[in-house]
Amino acid sequence: MQFVPIERGNANSQFMQQMRKKGLRVAFVHSGGPASGGNRIFSVAARQFIQSEIPVIAFLNGFKNPLKVEINKLTKGVHFIPANEELIRRGMIENALLFKTARDNPGKLSEDLEIKAPEDLNNLEKMAGIDKVLDVLEALRIGALGSFGGDDTLKVSNYVNLRAQMRSSDRLFRGTVHGPKTIDNDLPGIPWTYGYFSALDAAISSIDGFYHDGIATDVYHVIKLMGRNAGWITSGVVMNGRIAKACIPEELKGGVFDLHNFIEETVDIVIEREKRGVGGGVICIAEGLIDRLPKAMTQDAQKDEHGHTLFLAMHLEEAIAKYCGERYRVKTGKKKDFKAHELGHQLRQVAPSSYDQVLTAQIGLGLFDLIANGQFGRMISVHDAPDGTNNMGLYSIGYEELIDSMTLKVITRNIDPNSDYFRLYKTMQNMI
Image 1 (spheres, rainbow, N blue to C red):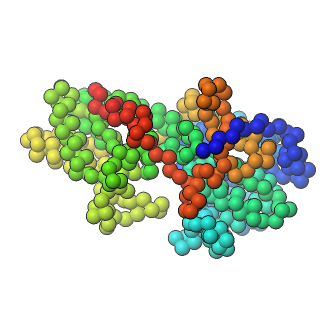
Image 2: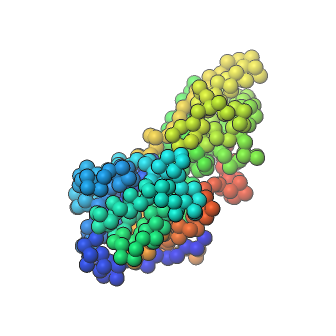
Image 3: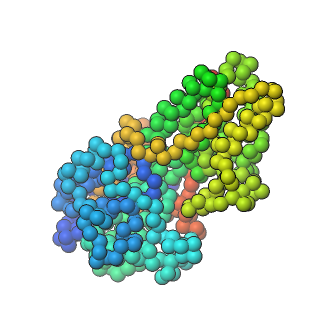
């Protein structure tokens, strides 16, 4: 991947002068699930623009309003809000996303009207949602759009950017830039997405409570954690050293989760720990394992609104807890409690960790720089230079390097099973 250092933007750049001359604004939109620190990105970027005499707005509820509300009915304070010093101040203080979020996807109007391939970019029916968003941006005199979000949001941001280039050269709207967000940390192009470490800190705090409860009561808590496509949160929790057994999608041989084998291995570990005088603890799984179950186990299962598998009448963590209890009784003749829990939504809007505070502020500054320089179709990346200088430096990477050219989907960044990090993940299990 080609990471380009971001040139510092300024109020007198050619693009900024054109924005002021034409009376254009900058807009921001957050789509998908929330993550800690999103407000800070907006506040840092918005302040730079306002100080440069460029008005800023934020769309409320993601792409929902630009997509679904008639242009002449879009109302300030109802469908979008203007940035001012009070909103910027609140953004530096409050955790819950000020301009809210939603999952409405202009690139997927229905199952039959979803953009899935390059040729769909020329399909007027499939592009109708993207065209509606662009019409709104033109009508509101938006010169640039900054998006925050995960893979779906980046995908839509790419569509909007590509479609804008197909329009007439005298268009007002010039393009999009993107800030990488997901507590799952599965976006490529940046070492750590914003929100990940905040969610991880919150998860570890909860796991710590489950661990000590398990030790005190000789109970095992089976916990499902977020992570549909990658196991970054589950593996991060394992680094705490309190997890007896874990499983993430990256360690599956052949890509299939053998539920029965996992239960056998888990029960054997429980019995082995008892010989060491440890009667309770924590077992963790990534939610994405349910999509890796054998087809015979999920063929009658329903799907949620995003196409994710629902495990028949029982959640996966509940099934593991139930069957572990049954196998333990068979192997020992004794009863042991395995209790199922899920950690998910409560991790998404906690106070940002110190790392995420710095990261989100840098992303906000980077979004300002890219827009001020008129550089569109690029995502912010924050990382250290190879020689150890420019710690948490600002870089950008083109959308085309992050997106599969055939499917137009964002490439998932998984944990490499051959990496030092994966080795540590395996090492830290069943430590205490």
